[in-house]
Image (cartoon, rainbow, N blue to C red):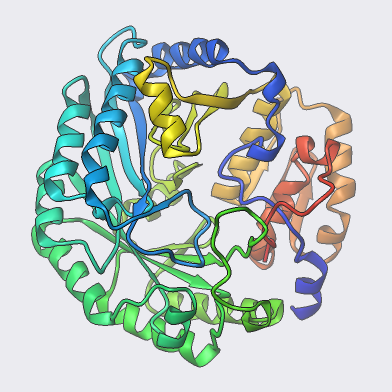
Length: 453
C-alpha cells in the first residue's frame, strides 16, 4: 500500500466538473453564449426534471484555516439584508430569461456559513426564491450548518420551508487539531445541533470529517469517529484535507507544513476510518462519502442515479444548475459560468442590471464525452464507451496511461470500458485524470491542485 501511495500521490483535480476551472476556455466564452445554452437547457429539462439552485452565502464570523472556500470574515450582521437583496435581484434576472415558470428540484445553501444569517433573513431569501418558482416532485433541499451557531429557530424555519437535509462541519474533535485550524467546537454543540434537527423532522443529517489535518493522529481520529458513532448521522463525508496554501486568500497558515501527517499516515487515517464506518453499518459512496442503508444517497448509488456537480455528490440529477451569489458556478450541461469572486464586484454587476458572470466555458463534443466518463467513474467506479463514437486514439492513449494501474491490479480495462476495482478506489482521481484531455494538452507550469491521496 505504501509503495502505491508514493507512486500515485500526485496533484490532481477533485472533478466536481469537467473541464475543471483552470482549463476553461474563456476566450471562446461570452455571457451571451452562456445565456443561450442556459435557455436551451431549461427548455429541454425543466418540465421533466426541474432545476437545481446553489446559493452561496459567504459570510463567516471567524476564519477556519483549513478552508479553501470563497468567504468574507465579518461580525457585522448588517451585511445580511443587502446581500440577500442582491441575490434576489440576480434570481429575478434569471427568471426573466426563463420561457416558463421554473420547477425547483434541488436547493443547496452553501458558504461561508449559511447559518451566519438570521432565521428571518433566510426566510426572506427563500420566500423571494419561491415567489417566482414551483417545487418539483421528489425535491431535496439542503444546507450546510455550523454546529456553534445553528439554532432551533434556524432549523424549524428551514424545515417549514421544505429543507430536510443538513450537513454539519465537524472536521475533528481533538482540541489541538481544532485550535490549529481555528475551528473550536465542543462535541456538545454538535450533539445538540444533530438532535434538534432530528426532533424537528430532518430526515438526513450529515457530518463532515476531514483526515490529513495538522496534528491528527490515529488515536485522535479513532476518538472522533467513536464520538460520531454515538450520534449516528445518516451520512458521513470523510474528506481528504486539500492543502493549497499557495492560493491567495485561503488562510491556510495556522500551522506549519511539518504539522501535517505524511501521505502514508494520512492514508492510514482514511483506511482506519473506512474500516470503522463499515463496522458501523455505513456503505462507501463514490469518493469520500459514506451513508446508511436508508439514506437517499445509498439508494441512488444502488440505482445508478448518483450524480456529482459543484455541490458535490447528490442523489438526483438535473441538467440545469443555477448558481446564485458571489463566486457561484452555474452549469447548463453545455456550458459553465462563474460569478464575480468579490462581494463588491458581484453586487456592482447585479445592481447595474447585468448577470455577474465574469468567466466560463462552452463544452465541445469531446468535452461532453469526457465529462460523461469522468462522471461515471466518480459516481459508479466504472464507465463504458460501447456504441459510442469515442476516438480510437483517445482510447489507446487512456489505456497506455493506465498500464501501471492495470499491472498493479487497481483497474480492469476492457475493450469497451473499464472498472475501478475495490483496491483502486483510493486512486479514482488518478484514473479520471487519464480522461482529462484538457489538462493533458495544457500541463500547468506550477502546481494548482491538491494531492490525490
